[in-house]
Image (cartoon, rainbow, N blue to C red):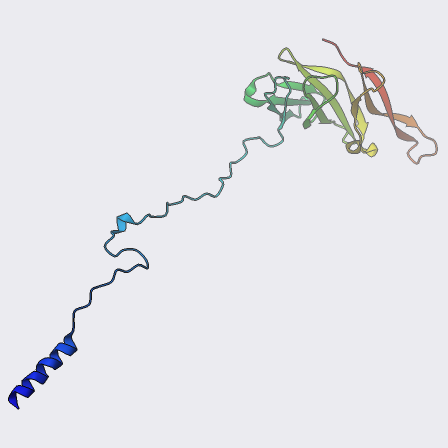
Length: 208
């Protein structure tokens, strides 16, 4: 009986313990034995937002190919001498002497492209003492000097010069420019006794 009890105990221990199981390798995810340095890290990205570069173009300045060398630079109305009625136009880096326009009170500059010229022209729309008019001056840069292309001319604001192509090449004679201008005319039927007429004329370009 005693031997029978010992046999049952040994059999029970053998069945309940069994053979130790081996640890299986984790095939899902990284190996736990790998260090953090062995795992590729995503690159640290810098802020890729485009930087806004402030414009260095002065207020009222306009860029043009004024020298005909495809190296544009700006021109701007620099200052106005009210006492002496002079408008000063200056240029980028002071590469050219200031352009002085007498009998004017400031205004705006703009580049003008016309057929027959190998460079941009500089157009000044000037203010006059009589605020009812704009006066126009056209210049070309030759041999490092600003030279008038034609004489200045005035247009009355009632003629809405902003809607006009105030200067253009004469299609019948490329050596001449067409320009508008305003003239005073007596009108007995008008309350004021006069009126302003808008006319157009062809004038020769100056040669250098």
